[in-house]
Image 1 (tube, rainbow, N blue to C red):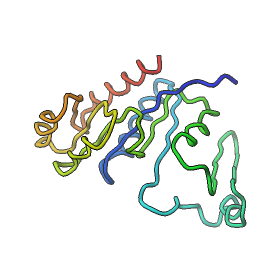
Image 2 (cartoon, helix red, strand yellow):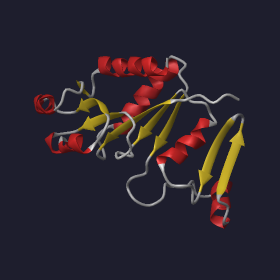
Image 3 (tube, rainbow, N blue to C red):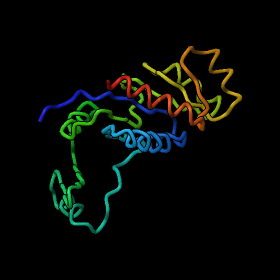
Image 4 (spheres, rainbow, N blue to C red):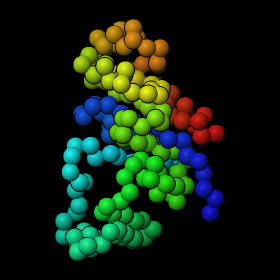
Length: 176
């Protein structure tokens, strides 16, 4: 099996900025174009991600297994405890599945190309704390002028469907 070098794009912003919603829209558009996409989500709210209680795979972990994998009809769910830290290790894990594109929700301080979501003026300083921002999506029209004063990075309203199409086209160019 030949491994591909996927394009990696981060989707970053503060909590409730629309990251998951944007990723869902991107996945749908990419799937329609038959682009193999993987997603890594950073659980940045403290604690461990929720396990599905009562399932055998969760029971295995609670009994002491480091990894539990469930397969059925070609689908699998992988749960692990005490996995190697870091985004690079998680990307290596996904490489087996040969994605063309990996969307990463969170991990703001990593240096992959980023799409930044801004809810309001209070979020604008985040722009100066991040590296490699390639596009900005904003919620409030009144912050557009403030953002454009701060940067030459392309800015779009978050609900602009043409912006979504532009991003998908950009991903296709990066993959090609």
